Each structure stands twice: as structure tokens, then as C-alpha cells.
Length: 318
Picture (tube, rainbow, N blue to C red):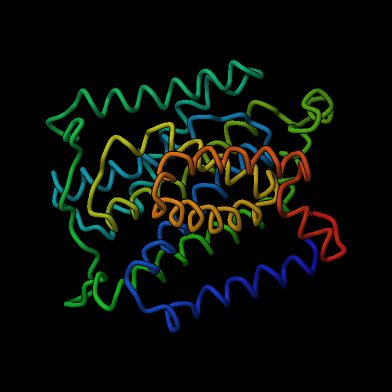
């Protein structure tokens, strides 16, 4: 990551931190919170997909596992939401380890098929275990986050905004550190030329297992936050629409850049939300996102982060 890009990322974080002092309506803050949630999922997916070169199409399942972990713990076991949210990261990591073991030695389309099947398996488990998960209707009326007598829903979601931003900021910082570490360099080697990486003593299977587990932790955590924030857990979190939207964020933002998907997540969340309010655009908005992804990848295969790099006179360097 270049010095210019670091300054840009820091400036973006400062701007986002002061937004609530100028944007006081609950709806706009809600859109920001949803954007931060999607951005967290996108940047963590970028670790395995963009940096590790692992075509994992079951990543949204880790998000859904985090959602249902928090929901089940708080409703069935009366666990505090503050414990249930990080617990989502633990269960997602365990699930990632389980699916990573068979995936580690697979190649190409087989990785896509197995990880996609894993996501569908999670959906079927949720639907079939209705006594615990609520089935097709899901779980509702989850508890609020509170500190003492203060409920986070107060003050137009002021506290929820900063907690969502903190989760995103921690994810981005940790992922950037990973990207610049020896482990990150080994991931790029495995992505670019696995045979050469293996000849240099890098265990391709081990790196794939590690990157899949690493990318799942904060995805599960933000899934738990999503459930507690919206106070609902529904099977739609395992749906294809969320998966396609998030992967669009990764590809439009710039796979392997970490910062790019976060930028794209903010832009696409606000764009799709704006189009949803236009008559006749409710369904067409997803087609527009798909077209935008094709156009960006044609103009700049490295995503919008490459476009910014050209404008700032510096190439992408993760």
C-alpha cells in the first residue's frame, strides 16, 4: 500500500467518523451502517478471493452462520448480545475450518462447487431445524445492545453507527497488516503460481486453510452484529442476492486491494438504496450493478482502486 493510498484511507476514516455530527436522520445513518456491514463482509472475502486466489463462493455462509449464532444464543439461551456477537466469529471460523479441509487440495471449478454447496447446505439446515432457527420465518425481536440503561437504538442509532464503523476499521487494518506480512506474500505466491510456491517450500493446502479461516472470523462477527442490529435472523442471509451483491463489491472495488471493496461497498449500498426508491427500479437495480461490474472490469480489471491509482499517479500496491 503506497503512502498516498494510506493517506487516502486515513482521510476516508476521519470523514466517516464525523458523518453523524452532520447527518442526524435515522434512515441515512441506517444506510451507512448497512454499508459498513457489507463492506466488512466484502473486504474479508477479498482476503481469500482476491489475495489468496481461492474461488470461495460460500463466503456469505460464514456471514449467515454469524447471524444465526447470535440469534440462537440470545433467544434460546438468553446470552448477552455482547457475547453473542463475537461468538458468531468463533462458529464461523469453525465452519470455515471444516469446509477448508476438503477444499484445500481442490482446483478451479471444484472449489466453486464445494463452497457453493456448503452455503446451500447451511440454508437447508436453517430451514429444516425450525424449532431452533425459526425455519422460513426466521427469528425476530432479538435484544438490543445496551450499556447500562443506555440503548444503542437511541439518538438516531448514533452508537450503532460507530460500532459498525469500528468493526469495519478493525477488519481493514488487520487485513492490510496481513497483506503486507510474510503470510500475505505467501498468499500472493500461491495465487499467482501455486506450483512455483510449492517448489519454494510453501504449503499450498495449509495456506488455503489458513486464509479461509482468517477471512471468516470478522465475517461471522459482523454477521452477529447484523442480527442484533436489525433484531432479526432470516434465511435470506444465505441467499444468492446478497452473495452476488457482495462479490460485485469485491470485483468493482478491486480484488486483492482490501481498500477497494470497502469503497465499492459504500458506493453500491447507497446507489442500490437510491434506486430502490425509484419506481420500476426495484429489480432493475441489480441488473445495473451487474452492468457496472462488467464496465469497470473492462476499463480497469483491477477495479476502481486502479482508477484512483491512475488519477493519483500511483499504481496499486497492497
